[in-house]
Amino acid sequence: MLKQEIEDGDASLSDPAFRADVLRGFGLRPRAIPARWFYDRRGSELFEAITDLPEYYPTRTETAILRSACPEVATLAGAGRVVVEFGSGSSTKTPILLSAVAPAAYVPIDISGDFLRDSSAQLASAFPGLPVLPVEADFMRPIALPPQVADLPKLGFFPGSTIGNMIPHAATDLLRAMKASLGAKESGGAMLLIGMDRIKDAAVLTAAYDDAQGVTAAFNLNLLERINRELDGTIPIDKFRHRAVWNDDRARIEMHLEALEDVSFTIEGRGFAMAAGETIHTENSHKFGPRDARILLRAGGWTPIAEWTDPQGLFAVILAEAQAPRLAP
Image (tube, rainbow, N blue to C red; front, side, top):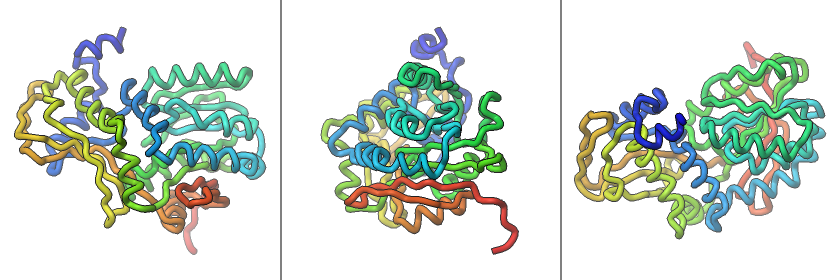
């Protein structure tokens, strides 16, 4: 009933953090809304459609790497770990890892509750006997994992180069929060298997985020639809367009929603106006050189111990272990 009431426009039932981020974001110059709010049910479904697009190389490339690398991951990590997946989505890559590492349990974490429950049920059916313990939460902050797995060593799983959606200091904070969530001081030590997209030709990158079928555009514009539905917004969605641009200075693809003409609208009764050409910055997708990736992981408290990539060097999967605190070099 809650989902239906929100879909019917009851703003009183919207996520208060979503409300706060949207109102704050529209007050910024330039305007910006955190990318995590893409992932209501419709946004999650659209993102899964994006991963199947011919232009979107990351998913198929990372999947191929995981199929090749996971037996070695299992050897390095050892059996009996709890696999904790951050931002699990539909968990399409997860069976590759679970089949290889003989986990004690699987804990998927996602901000989209409906999508999380559906994918968790599918995983539980595919792996009978494996405890599947979903946690609906924002993984950007330290998370209390289910008590059943508190004393077991953990293997974090963060595929898809989602780490690239954060600016560097936020990415570092996230890695530290993951370390705290996984319990780095446990016997066996926490480990993290993470996907990181590589810097490459700008034309390849731009096409991956602005596909010919317009699925990524629909994914971006769905954020405005969510605002209208959950926050009683009156944003004229047909007056906005999706834009994806490569920012070479910051080594990232940026996604924006650009006003096609001067527009005025309200959100929860508050008035806003945007001029033609003005944008709402909705997502960054940073890309990494090999050294960049390792430096970021170390800054977040993780020591890389193994790395795998595809023959073209498009994408990398890195296994890291939690660093012990150091007071000196």
